[in-house]
Length: 283
Image (cartoon, rainbow, N blue to C red; front, side, top):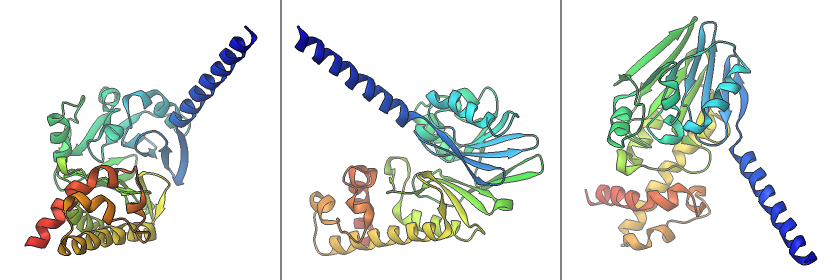
């Protein structure tokens, strides 16, 4: 009986530890990026928080389950309501919170992002869309949104805070490795051009879709690796590599993205990436 009790106690401790770990993983934190600009980091995409004298502008809103915690963190830096939410793209870890925010603020996204939401039967697509660029002016603060071309999807918005020389790139920028969503218009070739367009902006700081805040050199490095993995794939295809071998043969220590065994780049992007580059090589 004592052994059974001991095992039961150990099992309870294990379960409690696992639950505590899961709660710790899902908890969010807020950090200051610049004066009046914060980033909420944690489960889901990074949320930008621009505080103004007349209200708060959010960039992305994570999952629906994160709404209360986001609101709590926003209240720690401003006692004013969220007036606008700018979606960087349609993926649910960036726009899932729309279901809550659509009733208390104005949600804005690129037309293609809204179309992707509607096609995917996502709840609460934005009521306001733009095609090339738009801006929100609130409390003397300007926040611009640009469509600079395809990349992660066909509807990625680049958010620019001109007074703070900062961008929020959504999943166009990533600290580990990118996911090219070919099912929703993503393109590695387009991504390089879009990154070049971002680099034409005057900024020194960038909030990526996931991971720690970046500087301009980090964005250049990200662009350079995108070009490098495209070149490597093209060389392998020219050498006669079949699609079935692409996931193994593209790996090299020189390109960190290819060494992320369980990452979205290696796990989900490679088949479409092969097809995209193969079509370029044939042409």
